[in-house]
Amino acid sequence: MSLRTWKEAGSQFAFRDHDIFYRADGHGREALLCIHGFPTASWDWEPVWASLRQRFGHVVAPDLLGFGWSAKPRGHDYSLIEQADLCDALLAERGIERVHVLAHDYGVSVAQELLAREISQPRRRAQLLSVVFLNGGLFPETHRAVWQQRWLNGPLGPLLTQLMNEKRFGETFSRVFGPDTRPGLIELHDFWQLISHRDGHRIAHRLIRYIRERRMNRERWVAALQRSPVPLRLINGPLDPVSGAHLLDRYRELVPEPDTVSIPGVGHYPQVEAPDRVLRAFHEFHDRMSGEKRPRSLS
Image 1 (cartoon, one colour):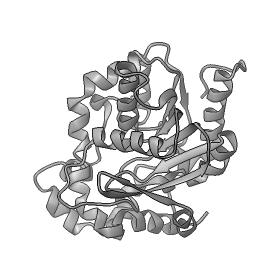
Image 2: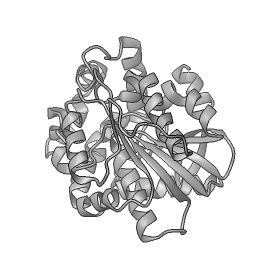
Image 3: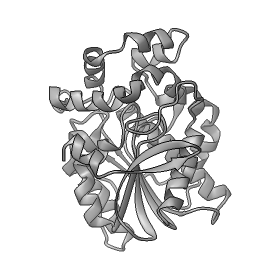
């Protein structure tokens, strides 16, 4: 599906006076919520969308505030907590009462907050049924930011956004993929179209504050993993320099009875780099929850 087709099939809803783009297929009170990462958008899920739609009668994926085709207010204080509120509001908008989550990168922290809410305030929102994480900063101590992220998160961040262009973005973005699974020029151009829409690249220094927010909420969000009342699985691309094999090791160390899958040869974007293998691991997890006996870990 082309980027244009993805957009044309999308919808909008209002969240705190901001227009939010989302893609949804199907209807029903139980659904799958897909939460994308930084700096991209819901289109990250396109390679796996058809299979997810076939598995679940209702699949929803927003462009979070500040991303993709959603509103990108310039002076806004972007927050992972607010993004979790956005997800709750979208679930209510769609009439969803029970939800599974698939989350990547920035989205894993949003999912951790939703998980923490399920523990502390059950039954006040859509019931969380399961969470599958892809590569992301589940533990602040294992997040190895690339130098552009470190600069964006520092005092020179606003200046760096002024220097950002499609060529520089493509060079940096490609480095987090596996050496044999990097995006081509057309894919990079599409990613850039999403990021630069409404000059979104100019607010990257505000969006990147999630790195600090993860540190501030580490105790709450790690505890959510350790005390989770719902099944969890981590699907990891080990060649990711930001949250690869070292994240997998930390997850196995801190999370009780860890359910993990490592996909060899893959980097930071498993759902884009190896969609078939991600789908196999994802569906195996849900098959097991449905009562089929399958292996607990794959490699």
